[in-house]
Image 1 (cartoon, rainbow, N blue to C red):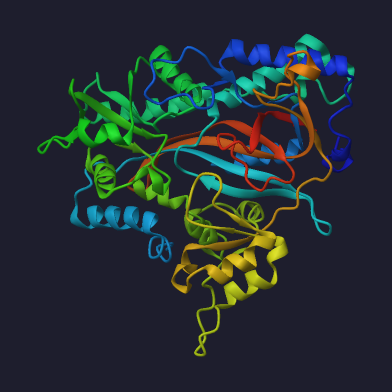
Image 2 (cartoon, rainbow, N blue to C red):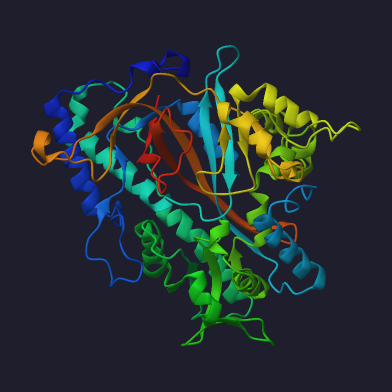
Length: 496
């Protein structure tokens, strides 16, 4: 059935209270039994090993995506210095530090390892063709790969257990794609480890997970550790940046990265932190990041690759003729398909400042067209963007020298009146629900993320793969999409 024939506004099928209760009970039990988990809110970072957990926020029904667009997204995963670090102090610190290391020849490892996620929304404009549009490309600490597999398995379990009460002809096994993200992402980290050992590193070296203190999303990371150990025989060690201030050192003669007190040699540094300014509260935290960067360990990602995920880079790639530079030999029709996935975007500094000191053309255009726009900075993580009616006041408060750090992007027009049942641990009303957890029905927006990894360097790709997907579903009135920040629930794909 073609995408245009699917009635998004009719989704999901209506549930009776009894059907809802059955699905909630089976979904939450399955989540707890299979590790679709979070640590509870307020869990003290310095507490003993956790003895309790809650299920991650989840959706009862999978989210409809046109089959053709889903397959296109899977297929597509596989000169921007200006504005990258000039005005944003956090990004500037990373950019200047990396550039100084590169120029002085201090970087001893020239392979880059990336675990990526490219995020998309289905675009249904009032006029024009429907299509899949890219939201952003994430290059550091891409999360929920492991839990995305668990939620896909959960929805397949609900289908097997209940047939979803025969409520929709779309709810059948062929429309619920399998998702093997855990094995795929671990394979990418293992490829980095093997490359390190093959170049003379110790076979007993370990992968370093650089994590945030008090990480509630720890189980999403633990599944990778288990897969690395049980499938590839690779051990892991977890450290925060604060730990690494004193535990990390680089051997002066060999550039080997060592972690005390046991002197563990590190093959791959895998960052699940390090993308927000508050994670670098003083210069010694930046110095620690640079120390790791200079070592022989393969970084996932390097600072350069982290910066490549910045919005200014996304803006530059959207300019005419730029994508072609990075896809030599690729047929123009294929390049055009990729370019058509980009939304209209521009820099606030575009056009320069006139002799009379007026705003640049890019800023004026953003002010005039603000109801259809989002402003994005050079940052990862939720909560950083500025939307629609908040834009004029923000532009009025933005210092002129900071315009280069921001881009304006046309908002994607998502399917309207799509519903969902959202279940979060803690949605309890013992008085009215008899102590049972309830689902909340809402009009929703679902964002598709496609995971992939690549090991490359010196202009050559050593290995790469597309390895799975993630769906995050949120209420339509929520601008942000982060599950960890409380805006979204985990979901899976229903191909229509």
